[in-house]
Length: 550
Image (cartoon, rainbow, N blue to C red; front, side, top):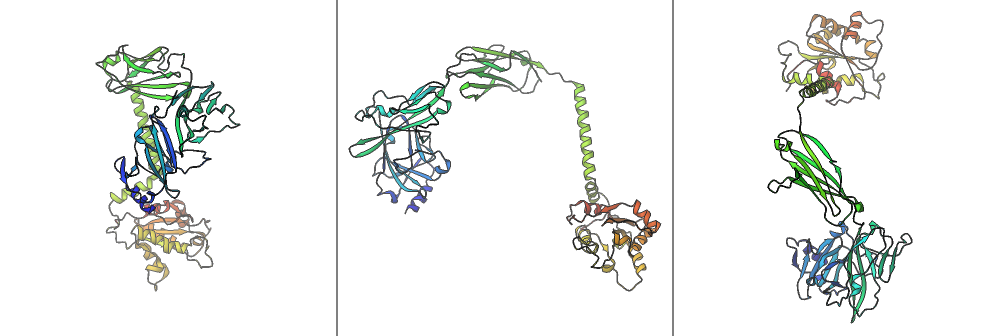
């Protein structure tokens, strides 16, 4: 049944108060009775009665989402759900009346999910006359900082037939008790004594006491709002900016903001800051002005007052703009004069030259860092297909050292795996090139040397995977053959990959030794993955022939 009540409560929306039925609460008896004085601030908490309660409300937003409030004036009237409004206001687990009216009297029902299924609270609001209040104290106190002050409970001045009730005090929802750590705060004769008073003593004080009317136990609750103040300042306003007369450069036709910062000492009376043109307040021509106030606690306030000119005119250049400030002690003023801002041609030329140089250096650095990507992009869109009609069958011949499994390092990618798997995966599958790998693309049966030379001549590039095993093994013949073919056919170019570091054997043919020194080398690092955005593969793509791929 209570679950159904919650579902009904969640669907209440729109107006401030809507009728609703809570069958689970119909037979629940009231558990708390409150009396309040009309036209004063009052707070009602959704909490079960507790003799040793240490706090009477919480402003937690999390708790506010869990609490549902309902209300009716009489038992025979339907319940109404209380939603967001200015009065009463939902704050945390409490309802705040600012102020509470006689019309707020009635039965209040609250629910807290998983804690309080149904709590009925009786609230009776009486006028000061009906409550027989005599000498009712103010509900707003201004206490002087650093001095001794006292806070009396206004509600004790009502219900004269009750003698010396025991008052419980709460500040910002928490019960006030005498503590050794705060010797300056004492509770005497149901009043709070502060000597001295600190700025942290400001807040909302709530006082409760018990009143028995026949057999009903009422809690009389009243609230006092305390503000801690300083003595009113004895100083006039102090200008932080401008100070005296300030000349400000301005450009014709451009918008301009005139700022005025003024420091005021503490006082409760009004402070005023305004801009005047030529010491006159012209009602026909009102300057667009805005004020921002920054509090300095008990030291006072700083006001930032801004006048906005939509565009600077010749008349503005000939005017004195006066910032005028006053308080209860006196007044002060400061002046801003506008001066035409001269356009310095040399400065503009210098700035333009520096900007151009900076842009040039930035572009140069960018090109240096990303030149290979720029070249590849240029080749992709603007350069023609250089493979068309050249009579070549392959884009590249791949030469590598054929190792026994016992010779390879299992922790690194082997030359054979690199040549047979990684290279084809990237150059063929990614970039659309056609590679010539002897073991894969040439049928066995012919002479090895003839097959190598024929395959190289049918290729546009010869990719040589260099390693210690390569330069000291039989595969070096393929490099020598590739060099000789490249010397005969200018369309054949060699791409050297330094797969592992090596030393050149003394037995290398001179033509091979010279090729290793003058030809560009792309270095493979064992930690590099086969990702297409890595530098290694971009360099490989750069050295391959320009080809239109699909």
